[in-house]
Length: 329
Image 1 (cartoon, helix red, strand yellow):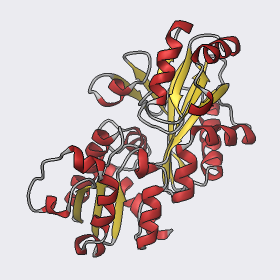
Image 2 (tube, helix red, strand yellow; image 1 turned 30 degrees about the vertical axis):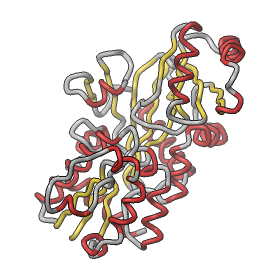
Image 3 (tube, rainbow, N blue to C red; image 1 turned 60 degrees about the vertical axis):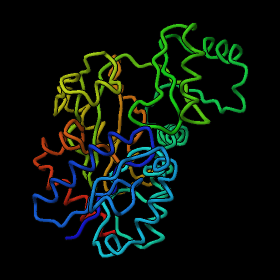
């Protein structure tokens, strides 16, 4: 099969996307597929010789993707494997472009990606479904000009620590765990660097868990034990900074409940193909759901491949299953 792998892009998760894309491309190629890996900010000339990336490439990266999709090399492909993370690659924009061109691709469509990327919408759906999620508030840039007032409001409603995060971002980019009121203003300003809306969330003391979805199957629940105590960017992507336990050493009834809730939420969020829920198992035994990653990482550190392997699905079999689901849509 001729497969184009899209990677890189312009989001803050660009480097992770490049790692995912290269891992996907090399694995598919080893399995005998004809693979074209493309950094979406670069012209098609990248297939012939290395191209030095400039700020101009990044600035015009989304426009360049459209030009790439018009080329004969891409038009002749059987499938587009989108390995972009964050930004337009994961919020429905790239999916809309792929739909317009009539390409078959992996993962959720425009609607599912847009909903899953938006933590505010996701949390509202969790609440409607009765799926436990931490208490939360949200602010837009328009109503967040008086930082002192906002800090007082937050401090009155939550006990510290709390979590401050952009409403539409991944890989813990722009996320802060705030342990006192004096840290709030800088955390809010950081989150607003990445989005016009932010989420303030109760910090859940407990165990870091994740559960992947492939098709209509919930993969084994995986536990993450980060060196920092918080599963931050460094712990996610640096060797030796986290321990992964799969299946998680938790009560089987709790694991089954998490898997069932995940499948229910996945459908309600209008997602398709595959994804990964992040959650924490509170000290009271309640699984608190945070968000869904509609295009989870596929690096050597990534969690869905680890969970799939525990379920007897090798990395190449996982990729081919994801492609099969994309072709069926």
